[in-house]
Image (cartoon, rainbow, N blue to C red):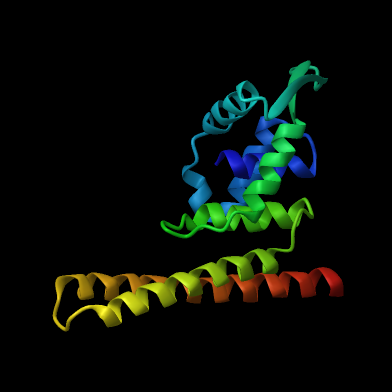
Length: 177
């Protein structure tokens, strides 16, 4: 969650309420269960870590001093590192989806290229697991476990194919619209 919030701030400084609304929009129905205080706890932690700064901004008469959060240079470096991070031992699909959405919104990276990097990592891991499975004696318990890992990796690859199709189409809509 922290990295997704930082990436959304890379586009522009924002109020906590606006960040929460953007996260909920990106996550669709999964975002409905997001605790309203969670974004503010996250922003406080990021501020204490020196990744964001908080400034008071003029607001509406009923809210004269609203907090606006912006990235620090350390926050910018963390966003850049997060976008290039390729990890899939335990995929967090919602986090990866937020990475794609934030990268596209702030024009930090091409979502299709991020998907391609994840796919390369999954294919590398799939080859390793398949080789390990071939080395196991027939009927071994480890062989069954490895088969489960192969099936999971193949399912994740299919999901990445769907992500690529969706983000490739999003680029076409932007160019055509």
